[in-house]
Image (cartoon, rainbow, N blue to C red):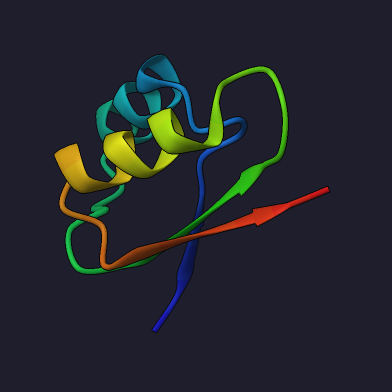
Length: 57
């Protein structure tokens, strides 16, 4: 499986990835720590049907 980079994991970041034609469904996403509450990042990953999320600093 591939990791999909979603910048800070904000809703807008997920939308931008989707608009680029990159499928997030059932994929693991990776997001930078910060800017947004980490719970919101997880919620956004769920909204876009990602299989999971990795946060890094």
